[in-house]
Image (cartoon, rainbow, N blue to C red; front, side, top):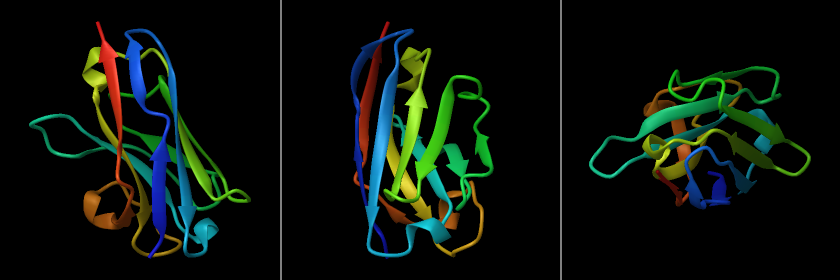
Length: 125
């Protein structure tokens, strides 16, 4: 298991930016793909972005493509989510996650075995 701790959430006006960070500990961070998910009140948790173990490839939900950027620093065991041009519909609790199996990619909830506690992002209109 890997322990994940998110930070960087907060309140921002529409059109603004936030940068989320996730610090990992407990196992070989560089062997696992990482992802960001979010869950709005009354809605299911949904995929936001994922990045491969090397950082060489990434993928995004259509709703955030072109506005959000995922990155990782394996030397520091961190993964980040830069969020620009934020919209009120981006309001949610954002979760960092690590894949269940090393050297695999994933976008489904079941692909991920370790989760952070979440950080609240609120975008006001």
